[in-house]
Image (cartoon, rainbow, N blue to C red; front, side, top):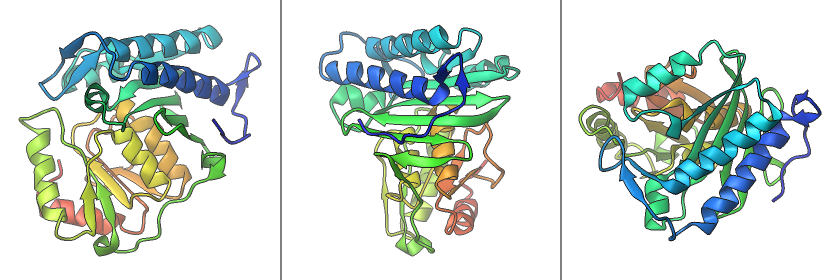
Amino acid sequence: MTVSDQQGTVVGGKSFAAVAINCAAKAGEWIKSKLGNYEKLDIKYSAHDLVTEVDKGSETLIKRLVLTHFPHHSFLGEEGVEPGPEASARALEEVSEAEYLWIVDPIDGTTNFVHGFPFFVVSIALAHKGEVILGVVYDPMRDELFIAEKGKGAYVHGKRMSVSQEDSLKTSLIATGFPADLDYALPLNMKGLQALAPQVRNIRSGGSAALHMAYVAAGRLSGFWEIGLNSWDLAAGALLIQESGGIVTDTLGQPYNLGVRNVAASNGKVHQSFLDALAAADAVK
């Protein structure tokens, strides 16, 4: 795996970035070894929201490694939180005062993992007093590691990333997802999909919000939006995009923070027209 040679803030002789990279690499290697070989599948919030022992094992591995190096840091992982939007909001609120908070999705794209569809990642972010300062998204199937540190840019394969240059929706490749919340988030997202499809070059839905965000940062997508996401879906990817010159807001256009659930991210050039199209379709809340 090739990553940039930049070093993050050092505490106790080990940089935040080095620990995050090590965690992502080890978890990713383990997840890849379990592809097609998981033992137990459970349903969480809905039939669209899945979890396996591999998700839980990946989170345990990451948490142990992080707390070995930084025992006084706080940790928020998807599998440690009860399903549903209310529980997610509560869990984030409980750690909102933490000085250093690691925010982890041990497998973003579990449904893909379960079906053997190779589009899933490990997502690890570190926030300092509520602001994301480090983001790592690792795709084990392609051995691609996307990393950003606040104020230091974003990199993949050791090369600096920058967002795409499309300046209109009609030339844009946009991504979205299909939320697990079938009563609120999915219908709202479908409104946006129906409105945007005729206005853009095309729309993709790969099934991993974190990887879609990384692709916006890398210039492979012009934008991404989805309703009803969580901090662990978005935190690392948001910093990747910001450090690559893009913009991340909620669907109403307010700046990104850890509490954002309805996200719109883009190369910046199409952001306002992107938001306007969603608003015109009444696809924002």
